[in-house]
Image 1 (cartoon, rainbow, N blue to C red):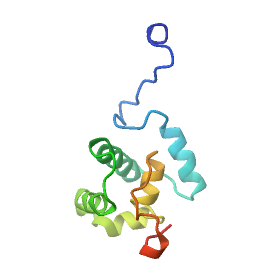
Image 2 (cartoon, rainbow, N blue to C red; image 1 turned 180 degrees about the horizontal axis):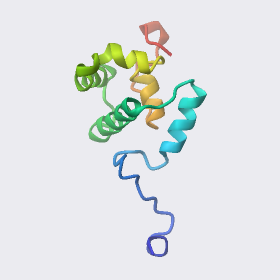
Image 3 (tube, rainbow, N blue to C red; image 1 turned 30 degrees about the vertical axis):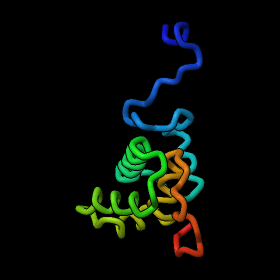
Image 4 (cartoon, rainbow, N blue to C red; image 1 turned 180 degrees about the vertical axis):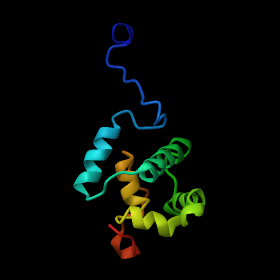
Length: 115
């Protein structure tokens, strides 16, 4: 019925309410696989957190996202732990897997980020 009333409308995955319209968990899993990562519950939690941060602030700074992730995952080791599960960087690689444009500076090799 939804297709008849609103053709072309996409229903959001309830597990990812802040996901970009063109993003799917299957596409994230495929991208992660290509990057040598098998997504775990913690990876999905980071993806959800990033999508939430970007839904509240369309252009957050890399520092804001970095600090928010560090605080959110403090109990597991914070940002150090996140670099273990996201070798390309939790902000840059995590944003890419979440279907988001990484914040400026998160993929700048001259800034010392991991790509």
